[in-house]
Image (cartoon, rainbow, N blue to C red; front, side, top):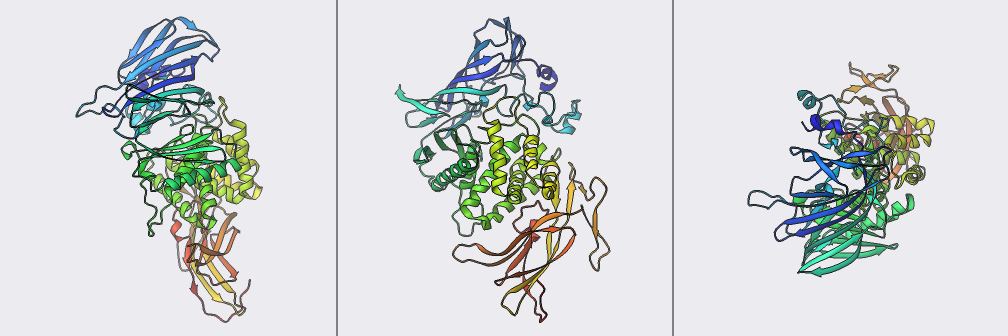
Length: 615
Protein backbone atom coordinates (compact mmCIF):
# COMPACT_ATOMS: atom_id res chain seq x y z
CA UNK A 1 0.00 0.00 0.00
CA UNK A 2 2.90 2.36 0.73
CA UNK A 3 4.13 1.91 -2.83
CA UNK A 4 0.68 2.05 -4.40
CA UNK A 5 -0.28 5.24 -2.57
CA UNK A 6 3.00 7.15 -2.57
CA UNK A 7 5.27 6.05 -5.43
CA UNK A 8 3.51 8.54 -7.73
CA UNK A 9 5.40 11.23 -5.77
CA UNK A 10 8.76 9.60 -6.42
CA UNK A 11 9.73 12.11 -9.10
CA UNK A 12 8.33 15.20 -7.40
CA UNK A 13 11.15 17.79 -7.34
CA UNK A 14 12.48 18.39 -3.81
CA UNK A 15 15.08 20.69 -2.25
CA UNK A 16 18.38 19.00 -1.38
CA UNK A 17 19.91 18.84 2.07
CA UNK A 18 23.18 20.80 2.23
CA UNK A 19 23.83 21.25 5.98
CA UNK A 20 22.88 19.62 9.30
CA UNK A 21 23.30 21.10 12.77
CA UNK A 22 21.98 18.52 15.21
CA UNK A 23 21.73 17.69 18.90
CA UNK A 24 21.23 14.38 20.68
CA UNK A 25 20.54 14.17 24.42
CA UNK A 26 21.08 10.61 25.67
CA UNK A 27 19.73 9.51 29.06
CA UNK A 28 21.30 6.10 29.84
CA UNK A 29 19.69 5.76 33.29
CA UNK A 30 16.14 5.84 31.89
CA UNK A 31 17.09 4.71 28.35
CA UNK A 32 15.48 7.78 26.78
CA UNK A 33 16.60 10.35 24.22
CA UNK A 34 15.63 13.78 22.97
CA UNK A 35 17.04 14.98 19.67
CA UNK A 36 16.63 17.49 16.92
CA UNK A 37 18.32 19.30 14.08
CA UNK A 38 18.32 22.25 11.78
CA UNK A 39 18.29 21.13 8.15
CA UNK A 40 19.40 23.61 5.49
CA UNK A 41 17.81 22.72 2.15
CA UNK A 42 18.34 24.35 -1.24
CA UNK A 43 16.23 24.13 -4.38
CA UNK A 44 18.91 22.93 -6.80
CA UNK A 45 16.41 22.17 -9.57
CA UNK A 46 15.47 24.54 -12.38
CA UNK A 47 11.77 24.60 -11.42
CA UNK A 48 9.81 26.13 -8.55
CA UNK A 49 8.92 23.68 -5.76
CA UNK A 50 5.50 24.13 -4.19
CA UNK A 51 5.35 21.10 -1.89
CA UNK A 52 7.80 19.53 0.57
CA UNK A 53 7.54 15.75 1.11
CA UNK A 54 8.74 14.57 4.54
CA UNK A 55 9.17 11.10 5.99
CA UNK A 56 8.86 11.58 9.75
CA UNK A 57 9.59 9.22 12.68
CA UNK A 58 6.92 7.09 14.33
CA UNK A 59 7.38 8.95 17.62
CA UNK A 60 6.52 12.42 19.01
CA UNK A 61 8.06 14.82 16.46
CA UNK A 62 7.58 18.53 15.88
CA UNK A 63 8.58 20.03 12.51
CA UNK A 64 8.76 23.73 11.65
CA UNK A 65 9.65 25.44 8.37
CA UNK A 66 10.83 29.01 7.85
CA UNK A 67 8.45 29.37 4.90
CA UNK A 68 4.72 29.71 5.50
CA UNK A 69 3.02 26.44 4.55
CA UNK A 70 0.05 24.17 5.16
CA UNK A 71 -0.06 20.41 5.71
CA UNK A 72 -2.11 19.32 2.72
CA UNK A 73 -1.72 15.56 3.12
CA UNK A 74 -0.64 13.45 6.09
CA UNK A 75 -0.42 9.72 5.42
CA UNK A 76 -0.20 8.66 9.06
CA UNK A 77 -0.06 4.96 8.19
CA UNK A 78 3.24 5.60 6.40
CA UNK A 79 4.52 8.59 8.45
CA UNK A 80 4.57 10.64 5.25
CA UNK A 81 3.54 14.30 5.21
CA UNK A 82 3.23 16.94 2.49
CA UNK A 83 3.71 20.66 3.24
CA UNK A 84 2.44 23.07 0.57
CA UNK A 85 4.19 26.44 0.54
CA UNK A 86 2.16 29.64 0.39
CA UNK A 87 4.91 30.92 -1.90
CA UNK A 88 6.80 28.39 -4.01
CA UNK A 89 10.49 27.78 -3.35
CA UNK A 90 12.27 29.19 -6.39
CA UNK A 91 15.43 27.71 -7.98
CA UNK A 92 18.42 28.58 -5.80
CA UNK A 93 16.26 29.48 -2.76
CA UNK A 94 17.01 28.11 0.71
CA UNK A 95 14.59 26.44 3.13
CA UNK A 96 15.30 25.95 6.84
CA UNK A 97 13.60 22.96 8.42
CA UNK A 98 13.83 22.38 12.18
CA UNK A 99 12.56 19.42 14.13
CA UNK A 100 12.62 17.91 17.60
CA UNK A 101 11.86 14.28 18.38
CA UNK A 102 11.90 11.99 21.39
CA UNK A 103 11.03 8.41 22.17
CA UNK A 104 7.66 7.35 23.48
CA UNK A 105 7.93 6.32 27.16
CA UNK A 106 9.52 2.92 27.67
CA UNK A 107 7.43 0.33 29.51
CA UNK A 108 8.06 -3.10 30.94
CA UNK A 109 6.74 -4.61 27.70
CA UNK A 110 7.72 -1.98 25.11
CA UNK A 111 11.23 -0.78 24.30
CA UNK A 112 10.65 2.51 22.49
CA UNK A 113 14.22 3.76 22.47
CA UNK A 114 17.56 2.57 21.06
CA UNK A 115 19.33 3.96 24.16
CA UNK A 116 20.97 1.36 26.42
CA UNK A 117 22.55 1.66 29.86
CA UNK A 118 26.09 1.46 28.48
CA UNK A 119 27.14 1.54 24.82
CA UNK A 120 24.37 3.43 23.01
CA UNK A 121 24.69 3.56 19.21
CA UNK A 122 22.11 5.51 17.18
CA UNK A 123 22.44 6.57 13.55
CA UNK A 124 20.59 9.27 11.65
CA UNK A 125 18.04 6.89 10.14
CA UNK A 126 15.82 7.83 13.11
CA UNK A 127 15.57 11.41 11.78
CA UNK A 128 13.13 12.84 9.20
CA UNK A 129 14.12 12.56 5.54
CA UNK A 130 13.02 14.36 2.39
CA UNK A 131 11.18 12.85 -0.56
CA UNK A 132 9.68 9.49 -1.40
CA UNK A 133 12.01 6.57 -0.67
CA UNK A 134 11.76 3.23 -2.44
CA UNK A 135 13.72 1.42 0.29
CA UNK A 136 10.46 0.14 1.82
CA UNK A 137 9.16 -1.34 -1.42
CA UNK A 138 8.67 -5.09 -1.73
CA UNK A 139 11.51 -6.67 -3.74
CA UNK A 140 10.54 -10.32 -4.01
CA UNK A 141 9.09 -10.96 -7.49
CA UNK A 142 6.46 -13.44 -6.34
CA UNK A 143 5.28 -11.27 -3.46
CA UNK A 144 5.00 -8.27 -5.80
CA UNK A 145 2.88 -10.36 -8.14
CA UNK A 146 0.64 -11.43 -5.25
CA UNK A 147 -0.13 -7.79 -4.44
CA UNK A 148 -0.56 -6.69 -8.07
CA UNK A 149 2.68 -4.72 -8.20
CA UNK A 150 4.60 -4.45 -11.43
CA UNK A 151 7.87 -6.43 -11.68
CA UNK A 152 10.76 -4.28 -10.51
CA UNK A 153 14.48 -4.76 -10.03
CA UNK A 154 15.97 -3.99 -6.65
CA UNK A 155 18.02 -1.19 -8.20
CA UNK A 156 17.89 0.61 -11.59
CA UNK A 157 20.38 -0.12 -14.36
CA UNK A 158 23.48 2.11 -14.36
CA UNK A 159 22.38 3.78 -17.61
CA UNK A 160 18.71 4.22 -16.64
CA UNK A 161 17.42 7.84 -16.75
CA UNK A 162 18.09 9.51 -13.40
CA UNK A 163 20.04 6.56 -11.98
CA UNK A 164 23.13 8.70 -11.40
CA UNK A 165 21.30 11.64 -9.79
CA UNK A 166 21.64 10.31 -6.22
CA UNK A 167 24.20 8.29 -4.31
CA UNK A 168 23.05 5.12 -2.60
CA UNK A 169 23.56 6.32 1.01
CA UNK A 170 22.68 9.99 1.44
CA UNK A 171 19.07 10.11 0.23
CA UNK A 172 18.05 13.52 -1.10
CA UNK A 173 21.49 15.06 -0.53
CA UNK A 174 25.03 15.14 -1.83
CA UNK A 175 27.82 16.34 0.50
CA UNK A 176 26.77 18.30 3.59
CA UNK A 177 28.21 20.54 6.30
CA UNK A 178 27.88 18.85 9.69
CA UNK A 179 27.89 19.84 13.35
CA UNK A 180 26.52 17.96 16.39
CA UNK A 181 26.16 18.50 20.11
CA UNK A 182 25.75 15.30 22.11
CA UNK A 183 24.98 15.09 25.83
CA UNK A 184 25.00 12.13 28.18
CA UNK A 185 25.26 11.21 31.86
CA UNK A 186 28.28 12.42 33.82
CA UNK A 187 29.97 8.99 33.89
CA UNK A 188 29.90 8.46 30.10
CA UNK A 189 31.64 9.77 26.98
CA UNK A 190 29.47 10.87 24.02
CA UNK A 191 30.76 10.81 20.44
CA UNK A 192 29.65 11.90 16.95
CA UNK A 193 31.57 12.31 13.68
CA UNK A 194 33.77 15.36 13.44
CA UNK A 195 36.34 16.93 15.74
CA UNK A 196 35.70 17.77 19.38
CA UNK A 197 35.37 21.57 19.51
CA UNK A 198 34.12 21.97 23.06
CA UNK A 199 33.36 19.84 26.12
CA UNK A 200 31.54 20.97 29.27
CA UNK A 201 29.34 19.87 32.21
CA UNK A 202 25.95 21.31 33.01
CA UNK A 203 23.29 20.19 35.51
CA UNK A 204 25.19 16.97 36.20
CA UNK A 205 25.46 16.03 32.52
CA UNK A 206 28.33 16.03 30.02
CA UNK A 207 28.11 17.87 26.69
CA UNK A 208 30.31 17.42 23.61
CA UNK A 209 30.28 19.66 20.54
CA UNK A 210 31.64 18.08 17.33
CA UNK A 211 32.13 19.75 13.98
CA UNK A 212 33.47 18.43 10.71
CA UNK A 213 35.91 20.66 8.85
CA UNK A 214 34.96 19.32 5.41
CA UNK A 215 31.77 18.17 3.73
CA UNK A 216 30.55 14.63 4.43
CA UNK A 217 27.77 12.30 3.31
CA UNK A 218 24.42 12.62 5.04
CA UNK A 219 25.38 9.65 7.20
CA UNK A 220 26.24 10.07 10.86
CA UNK A 221 25.76 8.52 14.28
CA UNK A 222 25.75 9.18 18.02
CA UNK A 223 27.39 7.00 20.67
CA UNK A 224 27.67 7.02 24.45
CA UNK A 225 29.31 4.68 26.95
CA UNK A 226 31.57 4.20 29.93
CA UNK A 227 34.79 3.77 27.98
CA UNK A 228 38.48 3.37 28.49
CA UNK A 229 40.38 4.98 25.62
CA UNK A 230 43.56 3.80 23.93
CA UNK A 231 45.27 6.63 22.07
CA UNK A 232 48.10 6.72 19.57
CA UNK A 233 49.27 8.75 16.60
CA UNK A 234 50.43 7.58 13.20
CA UNK A 235 51.85 9.85 10.50
CA UNK A 236 50.05 12.84 11.94
CA UNK A 237 46.68 11.06 12.33
CA UNK A 238 45.33 10.75 15.88
CA UNK A 239 44.05 7.24 16.59
CA UNK A 240 41.56 6.42 19.34
CA UNK A 241 39.82 3.22 20.42
CA UNK A 242 36.95 3.55 22.92
CA UNK A 243 36.27 0.23 24.63
CA UNK A 244 34.55 -1.36 27.61
CA UNK A 245 37.28 -1.62 30.28
CA UNK A 246 36.99 -5.42 30.50
CA UNK A 247 37.25 -5.86 26.71
CA UNK A 248 40.88 -5.06 25.99
CA UNK A 249 41.70 -8.42 24.35
CA UNK A 250 42.00 -7.19 20.76
CA UNK A 251 42.58 -3.46 21.15
CA UNK A 252 46.20 -3.79 20.02
CA UNK A 253 45.09 -5.75 16.95
CA UNK A 254 42.64 -3.00 16.05
CA UNK A 255 45.24 -0.29 16.55
CA UNK A 256 47.57 -2.25 14.28
CA UNK A 257 44.76 -2.53 11.71
CA UNK A 258 44.35 1.26 11.71
CA UNK A 259 48.08 1.85 11.25
CA UNK A 260 48.62 -0.83 8.60
CA UNK A 261 45.51 0.33 6.76
CA UNK A 262 46.55 3.98 6.75
CA UNK A 263 49.98 2.99 5.41
CA UNK A 264 48.60 0.88 2.56
CA UNK A 265 45.76 3.17 1.53
CA UNK A 266 47.83 6.36 1.66
CA UNK A 267 50.59 4.68 -0.36
CA UNK A 268 48.30 3.21 -3.00
CA UNK A 269 45.20 5.41 -3.13
CA UNK A 270 44.50 9.06 -2.30
CA UNK A 271 45.47 10.77 0.99
CA UNK A 272 43.36 10.15 4.10
CA UNK A 273 40.99 13.12 4.40
CA UNK A 274 40.82 13.42 8.20
CA UNK A 275 43.23 14.18 11.06
CA UNK A 276 41.69 11.50 13.23
CA UNK A 277 40.36 7.92 13.11
CA UNK A 278 38.51 6.31 15.99
CA UNK A 279 36.78 3.04 16.82
CA UNK A 280 33.96 2.86 19.39
CA UNK A 281 32.65 -0.37 20.89
CA UNK A 282 28.94 -1.08 21.16
CA UNK A 283 27.23 -4.15 22.67
CA UNK A 284 26.17 -7.12 20.58
CA UNK A 285 22.52 -6.44 21.44
CA UNK A 286 22.92 -3.62 18.89
CA UNK A 287 24.09 -6.06 16.19
CA UNK A 288 27.14 -8.04 15.12
CA UNK A 289 28.62 -5.58 12.65
CA UNK A 290 30.86 -2.55 12.29
CA UNK A 291 29.91 0.59 10.36
CA UNK A 292 32.03 3.42 9.01
CA UNK A 293 30.95 7.02 9.46
CA UNK A 294 33.29 9.94 8.73
CA UNK A 295 36.40 9.46 10.97
CA UNK A 296 34.23 7.38 13.34
CA UNK A 297 33.76 3.58 13.33
CA UNK A 298 31.19 1.96 15.68
CA UNK A 299 32.32 -1.66 16.16
CA UNK A 300 30.33 -4.48 17.78
CA UNK A 301 31.91 -6.26 20.72
CA UNK A 302 30.84 -9.56 19.15
CA UNK A 303 33.08 -9.38 16.07
CA UNK A 304 35.99 -7.46 17.50
CA UNK A 305 36.47 -6.70 21.15
CA UNK A 306 35.64 -10.16 22.55
CA UNK A 307 36.55 -12.27 19.50
CA UNK A 308 38.85 -15.17 20.44
CA UNK A 309 41.66 -15.32 17.90
CA UNK A 310 44.42 -16.39 20.29
CA UNK A 311 43.51 -20.07 20.55
CA UNK A 312 46.33 -22.15 19.02
CA UNK A 313 43.77 -24.48 17.45
CA UNK A 314 41.79 -21.61 15.98
CA UNK A 315 42.53 -21.29 12.26
CA UNK A 316 40.02 -18.46 11.74
CA UNK A 317 40.75 -15.17 10.05
CA UNK A 318 41.99 -12.46 12.43
CA UNK A 319 38.66 -10.63 12.36
CA UNK A 320 39.46 -7.70 14.69
CA UNK A 321 42.42 -6.77 12.45
CA UNK A 322 40.75 -7.44 9.11
CA UNK A 323 37.41 -5.77 9.93
CA UNK A 324 39.30 -2.73 11.22
CA UNK A 325 41.16 -2.56 7.89
CA UNK A 326 37.86 -2.97 6.01
CA UNK A 327 36.04 -0.23 7.92
CA UNK A 328 38.98 2.14 7.65
CA UNK A 329 38.98 1.54 3.88
CA UNK A 330 35.44 2.91 3.81
CA UNK A 331 36.94 6.33 4.53
CA UNK A 332 38.01 6.06 0.86
CA UNK A 333 35.32 3.77 -0.62
CA UNK A 334 32.10 5.57 0.35
CA UNK A 335 33.44 8.59 2.19
CA UNK A 336 35.61 9.81 -0.70
CA UNK A 337 34.02 7.99 -3.65
CA UNK A 338 30.34 7.07 -3.41
CA UNK A 339 28.49 5.16 -6.11
CA UNK A 340 25.20 6.06 -7.75
CA UNK A 341 22.04 4.46 -6.44
CA UNK A 342 22.12 1.90 -9.25
CA UNK A 343 23.09 -1.72 -9.88
CA UNK A 344 26.69 -2.31 -8.93
CA UNK A 345 26.88 0.56 -6.42
CA UNK A 346 28.41 -1.54 -3.67
CA UNK A 347 31.23 -2.78 -5.91
CA UNK A 348 32.54 0.77 -5.46
CA UNK A 349 32.27 0.64 -1.66
CA UNK A 350 31.98 -2.79 -0.08
CA UNK A 351 33.99 -4.74 -2.67
CA UNK A 352 36.77 -2.16 -2.81
CA UNK A 353 36.92 -1.96 0.99
CA UNK A 354 37.07 -5.74 1.33
CA UNK A 355 39.75 -5.95 -1.36
CA UNK A 356 41.69 -3.23 0.44
CA UNK A 357 41.56 -5.16 3.70
CA UNK A 358 42.79 -8.31 1.93
CA UNK A 359 45.83 -6.39 0.67
CA UNK A 360 46.53 -5.19 4.21
CA UNK A 361 46.24 -8.79 5.42
CA UNK A 362 48.61 -9.88 2.65
CA UNK A 363 51.13 -7.23 3.65
CA UNK A 364 50.91 -8.26 7.30
CA UNK A 365 50.88 -12.04 6.82
CA UNK A 366 52.59 -12.68 3.46
CA UNK A 367 51.17 -14.00 0.20
CA UNK A 368 51.68 -17.59 1.39
CA UNK A 369 49.03 -17.12 4.09
CA UNK A 370 46.36 -15.71 1.78
CA UNK A 371 44.78 -19.05 0.97
CA UNK A 372 43.00 -19.00 4.34
CA UNK A 373 41.44 -15.58 3.70
CA UNK A 374 40.55 -16.29 0.06
CA UNK A 375 38.98 -19.63 0.88
CA UNK A 376 36.92 -17.96 3.60
CA UNK A 377 35.61 -15.47 1.02
CA UNK A 378 34.99 -18.24 -1.51
CA UNK A 379 32.98 -20.37 0.89
CA UNK A 380 30.91 -17.35 1.96
CA UNK A 381 30.03 -16.55 -1.64
CA UNK A 382 29.11 -20.14 -2.52
CA UNK A 383 26.90 -20.41 0.56
CA UNK A 384 25.24 -17.07 -0.16
CA UNK A 385 24.26 -17.93 -3.70
CA UNK A 386 22.51 -21.12 -2.55
CA UNK A 387 20.01 -19.09 -0.49
CA UNK A 388 19.42 -16.29 -3.01
CA UNK A 389 15.64 -15.81 -3.18
CA UNK A 390 15.27 -13.45 -6.13
CA UNK A 391 18.16 -13.73 -8.58
CA UNK A 392 21.93 -13.70 -8.58
CA UNK A 393 23.50 -10.83 -10.50
CA UNK A 394 26.99 -10.50 -11.96
CA UNK A 395 29.31 -8.53 -9.71
CA UNK A 396 29.12 -5.25 -11.63
CA UNK A 397 25.30 -5.42 -11.58
CA UNK A 398 24.86 -6.63 -7.99
CA UNK A 399 21.92 -5.11 -6.15
CA UNK A 400 23.39 -4.62 -2.68
CA UNK A 401 23.66 -8.40 -2.31
CA UNK A 402 26.11 -9.05 0.51
CA UNK A 403 27.44 -12.44 -0.59
CA UNK A 404 28.28 -10.85 -3.95
CA UNK A 405 29.75 -7.48 -2.97
CA UNK A 406 31.62 -8.75 0.11
CA UNK A 407 32.80 -12.28 -0.58
CA UNK A 408 32.78 -12.49 -4.37
CA UNK A 409 33.84 -8.87 -4.76
CA UNK A 410 36.92 -9.23 -2.57
CA UNK A 411 37.93 -12.45 -4.30
CA UNK A 412 37.51 -11.00 -7.80
CA UNK A 413 39.39 -7.78 -7.10
CA UNK A 414 42.21 -9.66 -5.37
CA UNK A 415 42.47 -12.05 -8.32
CA UNK A 416 42.55 -9.18 -10.83
CA UNK A 417 45.35 -7.48 -8.89
CA UNK A 418 47.22 -10.78 -8.92
CA UNK A 419 46.82 -11.22 -12.68
CA UNK A 420 47.53 -7.61 -13.64
CA UNK A 421 50.04 -6.86 -10.89
CA UNK A 422 49.41 -4.74 -7.80
CA UNK A 423 51.00 -1.61 -9.23
CA UNK A 424 48.91 -1.58 -12.42
CA UNK A 425 45.67 -2.55 -10.69
CA UNK A 426 46.02 -0.10 -7.81
CA UNK A 427 46.85 2.64 -10.32
CA UNK A 428 43.40 2.08 -11.87
CA UNK A 429 41.80 2.37 -8.43
CA UNK A 430 43.76 5.51 -7.59
CA UNK A 431 42.82 7.23 -10.87
CA UNK A 432 39.18 6.32 -10.30
CA UNK A 433 39.31 7.84 -6.81
CA UNK A 434 41.00 11.02 -8.04
CA UNK A 435 38.36 11.34 -10.75
CA UNK A 436 35.34 11.01 -8.43
CA UNK A 437 36.36 11.91 -4.86
CA UNK A 438 33.88 14.20 -3.08
CA UNK A 439 31.94 14.69 -6.34
CA UNK A 440 28.17 14.90 -6.64
CA UNK A 441 25.88 13.95 -9.52
CA UNK A 442 26.36 12.36 -11.91
CA UNK A 443 27.64 9.76 -9.45
CA UNK A 444 30.00 7.01 -10.66
CA UNK A 445 28.76 3.56 -11.60
CA UNK A 446 30.40 0.14 -11.52
CA UNK A 447 30.38 -0.24 -15.31
CA UNK A 448 32.70 2.75 -15.59
CA UNK A 449 35.12 1.23 -13.06
CA UNK A 450 35.09 -2.10 -14.92
CA UNK A 451 35.80 -0.31 -18.20
CA UNK A 452 38.81 1.34 -16.54
CA UNK A 453 40.08 -2.11 -15.56
CA UNK A 454 39.40 -3.45 -19.04
CA UNK A 455 41.46 -0.63 -20.58
CA UNK A 456 44.66 -1.81 -18.85
CA UNK A 457 44.02 -5.55 -19.26
CA UNK A 458 46.01 -7.26 -22.04
CA UNK A 459 44.12 -9.10 -24.78
CA UNK A 460 45.15 -12.49 -23.40
CA UNK A 461 43.41 -11.72 -20.09
CA UNK A 462 40.30 -9.90 -21.34
CA UNK A 463 38.33 -13.07 -20.62
CA UNK A 464 38.88 -12.38 -16.90
CA UNK A 465 36.84 -9.18 -17.07
CA UNK A 466 34.00 -11.06 -18.75
CA UNK A 467 34.19 -13.96 -16.31
CA UNK A 468 34.62 -12.03 -13.10
CA UNK A 469 32.60 -8.85 -13.54
CA UNK A 470 30.18 -9.16 -16.44
CA UNK A 471 28.91 -12.73 -16.00
CA UNK A 472 28.49 -15.37 -13.32
CA UNK A 473 31.36 -17.75 -14.09
CA UNK A 474 32.55 -20.64 -11.96
CA UNK A 475 35.15 -23.39 -12.20
CA UNK A 476 35.26 -27.00 -11.20
CA UNK A 477 39.02 -27.48 -10.88
CA UNK A 478 40.45 -30.47 -9.09
CA UNK A 479 43.49 -32.66 -8.74
CA UNK A 480 42.86 -36.16 -10.04
CA UNK A 481 46.28 -37.61 -9.19
CA UNK A 482 49.55 -36.23 -7.86
CA UNK A 483 52.87 -38.10 -7.52
CA UNK A 484 56.56 -37.34 -7.18
CA UNK A 485 59.79 -39.21 -7.71
CA UNK A 486 63.34 -38.37 -6.73
CA UNK A 487 65.73 -37.86 -9.63
CA UNK A 488 69.39 -38.92 -9.77
CA UNK A 489 70.57 -35.31 -9.41
CA UNK A 490 68.67 -34.89 -6.11
CA UNK A 491 65.81 -32.92 -7.63
CA UNK A 492 62.20 -34.11 -7.73
CA UNK A 493 59.76 -34.68 -10.56
CA UNK A 494 56.15 -33.87 -9.71
CA UNK A 495 53.44 -35.26 -11.99
CA UNK A 496 50.07 -33.60 -11.63
CA UNK A 497 46.88 -34.81 -13.28
CA UNK A 498 44.37 -31.95 -13.03
CA UNK A 499 40.88 -31.31 -14.34
CA UNK A 500 39.72 -27.81 -15.36
CA UNK A 501 36.05 -27.12 -16.08
CA UNK A 502 34.57 -23.65 -16.54
CA UNK A 503 30.90 -22.80 -16.87
CA UNK A 504 28.47 -19.93 -16.63
CA UNK A 505 25.46 -19.72 -14.36
CA UNK A 506 22.25 -17.88 -15.13
CA UNK A 507 20.44 -15.76 -12.54
CA UNK A 508 18.58 -18.81 -11.22
CA UNK A 509 21.69 -20.97 -10.87
CA UNK A 510 21.40 -23.11 -14.01
CA UNK A 511 24.81 -24.16 -15.39
CA UNK A 512 25.67 -23.37 -19.02
CA UNK A 513 28.71 -24.96 -20.70
CA UNK A 514 28.43 -23.33 -24.14
CA UNK A 515 29.49 -19.85 -25.16
CA UNK A 516 27.42 -17.44 -27.23
CA UNK A 517 28.60 -19.09 -30.45
CA UNK A 518 27.45 -22.45 -29.09
CA UNK A 519 30.97 -23.86 -28.69
CA UNK A 520 32.06 -26.04 -25.78
CA UNK A 521 34.74 -28.56 -24.80
CA UNK A 522 34.04 -32.20 -24.04
CA UNK A 523 36.21 -34.91 -22.54
CA UNK A 524 35.35 -38.51 -21.73
CA UNK A 525 37.58 -39.95 -18.98
CA UNK A 526 39.02 -43.39 -19.58
CA UNK A 527 36.60 -46.08 -18.48
CA UNK A 528 33.67 -43.68 -18.34
CA UNK A 529 30.71 -43.27 -20.67
CA UNK A 530 29.59 -39.81 -19.65
CA UNK A 531 31.54 -36.89 -21.14
CA UNK A 532 32.63 -33.87 -19.13
CA UNK A 533 31.73 -30.45 -20.52
CA UNK A 534 33.33 -27.02 -20.22
CA UNK A 535 33.24 -23.63 -21.82
CA UNK A 536 36.10 -23.24 -24.32
CA UNK A 537 39.33 -22.71 -22.39
CA UNK A 538 42.26 -20.40 -23.01
CA UNK A 539 42.74 -19.62 -19.35
CA UNK A 540 45.85 -18.85 -17.33
CA UNK A 541 45.55 -20.89 -14.16
CA UNK A 542 48.04 -21.16 -11.34
CA UNK A 543 49.77 -24.48 -10.73
CA UNK A 544 51.74 -24.91 -7.52
CA UNK A 545 54.01 -27.35 -5.71
CA UNK A 546 54.69 -26.96 -2.00
CA UNK A 547 57.17 -28.31 0.52
CA UNK A 548 57.21 -28.77 4.27
CA UNK A 549 55.64 -26.22 6.60
CA UNK A 550 58.19 -24.21 8.55
CA UNK A 551 57.74 -25.05 12.24
CA UNK A 552 58.67 -21.54 13.38
CA UNK A 553 56.55 -19.49 10.98
CA UNK A 554 53.82 -22.01 10.12
CA UNK A 555 54.28 -21.10 6.44
CA UNK A 556 54.62 -23.74 3.75
CA UNK A 557 57.57 -23.56 1.38
CA UNK A 558 56.59 -22.63 -2.17
CA UNK A 559 58.66 -24.77 -4.54
CA UNK A 560 56.84 -23.84 -7.75
CA UNK A 561 54.04 -21.41 -8.55
CA UNK A 562 53.22 -20.29 -12.08
CA UNK A 563 50.22 -19.38 -14.18
CA UNK A 564 50.03 -21.82 -17.09
CA UNK A 565 47.77 -21.55 -20.11
CA UNK A 566 45.11 -24.26 -20.02
CA UNK A 567 43.13 -25.21 -23.12
CA UNK A 568 41.83 -28.66 -22.21
CA UNK A 569 39.65 -30.24 -19.54
CA UNK A 570 42.19 -32.97 -18.74
CA UNK A 571 45.74 -31.75 -18.08
CA UNK A 572 49.03 -33.39 -17.13
CA UNK A 573 51.85 -31.28 -15.73
CA UNK A 574 55.44 -32.46 -15.18
CA UNK A 575 57.28 -30.10 -12.85
CA UNK A 576 60.82 -30.36 -11.49
CA UNK A 577 61.53 -28.80 -8.08
CA UNK A 578 64.69 -28.49 -6.00
CA UNK A 579 63.38 -29.77 -2.65
CA UNK A 580 61.19 -32.63 -1.53
CA UNK A 581 57.56 -31.79 -2.38
CA UNK A 582 54.64 -32.50 -0.07
CA UNK A 583 51.58 -31.10 -1.85
CA UNK A 584 50.54 -29.86 -5.29
CA UNK A 585 47.51 -28.13 -6.69
CA UNK A 586 45.64 -26.39 -9.49
CA UNK A 587 44.64 -22.84 -8.49
CA UNK A 588 46.08 -23.74 -5.08
CA UNK A 589 45.37 -20.37 -3.45
CA UNK A 590 41.70 -20.33 -4.53
CA UNK A 591 41.89 -17.16 -6.58
CA UNK A 592 39.26 -18.43 -9.01
CA UNK A 593 35.66 -19.08 -8.05
CA UNK A 594 35.47 -22.83 -7.72
CA UNK A 595 32.41 -24.90 -6.88
CA UNK A 596 34.50 -27.11 -4.58
CA UNK A 597 37.76 -25.51 -3.50
CA UNK A 598 38.66 -28.41 -1.18
CA UNK A 599 39.86 -30.64 -4.05
CA UNK A 600 42.24 -28.12 -5.64
CA UNK A 601 45.17 -29.55 -3.69
CA UNK A 602 46.44 -33.03 -3.00
CA UNK A 603 49.15 -34.65 -0.92
CA UNK A 604 51.80 -36.18 -3.14
CA UNK A 605 52.48 -39.90 -3.15
CA UNK A 606 55.93 -41.19 -4.05
CA UNK A 607 56.30 -42.95 -7.40
CA UNK A 608 59.16 -45.41 -7.65
CA UNK A 609 60.67 -45.46 -11.13
CA UNK A 610 64.06 -45.73 -12.79
CA UNK A 611 63.02 -43.92 -15.93
CA UNK A 612 64.58 -40.60 -16.83
CA UNK A 613 62.29 -37.65 -16.36
CA UNK A 614 61.60 -35.11 -19.05
CA UNK A 615 61.56 -31.48 -17.82
